[in-house]
Image (cartoon, rainbow, N blue to C red; front, side):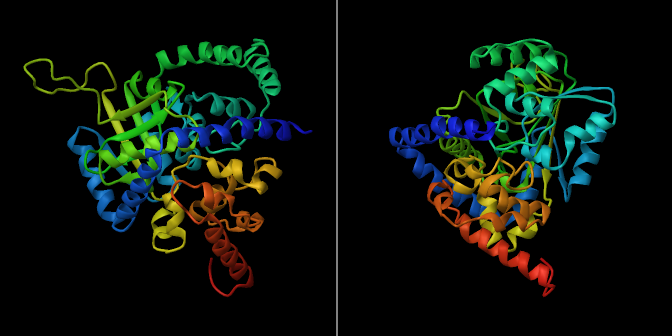
Length: 383
């Protein structure tokens, strides 16, 4: 068996029964998923209004908000905030990968570290992620051991716990001395200007609290009408990813603050003195105008569809344009890269549709992208 065959077999065996167990033991989660879909559809039905509302809310709580149309504009804004000669810790952001933030910051003279263990491993290996939640799912622990030995000069041993310990000790000093922390956002509350992040490692909490400046970069489709819906979204995402209850849920509403002196709320306190939220379009608003592609914007990135897809499991994790892989990645390759070719690999087994918490008819979206690909090739109209 290849490394991929071994790694994906272990991943499926660990993940699939665990998600079914979570949903069986916490039946209210399916109702929360239905509410999240309703909330996301409400935002998508009036997206520009909610973008403007979110930006005003962020400014009201002392943060700075930006809307960018493409990856180049995102890099330009992040570059102006960060500058050069800084140490930057990144708390796992698919949109940061999509817009090329890490490599851009490195190119202008910054030291940049991914702090999610899976992301750190693919940074070490200089490889694209193979799964939306578990970016290094294609690596066996045997390969990870050799990779850490090569990059850090330390043999962590063969146990999962010891591999994690070595990564933790390596990253601790990076957290404590970082100038900038960059995260994504699992959900953004339009009414409050808050971002909500769900995680298990603690790296996102460290990245968003320890450095004096926190930048959050995320897609406009992550906006939900209010903080109630945003909290539902992270619970649903954690459950369908098989990691429920999540170890940490982080709510960030502007820079750090305190009201301990005469109840007057002032900023900063112990946490960051600056908070920046960058909302990225990069094809999302155009997709929202298309009644079929709009469904792709409902995706909450739980990654459950990957493990149930026979095509993803048969390939080597490279289906789709990074960081988007698997069935959802084939949709998102069309949304943000105008690349319809990954959809051609879909065999329409339909498993992805059955397990999607947002009830996205992924095979229908991929069939639509196939038609756009062939029409584009035939030159009948632009894709």
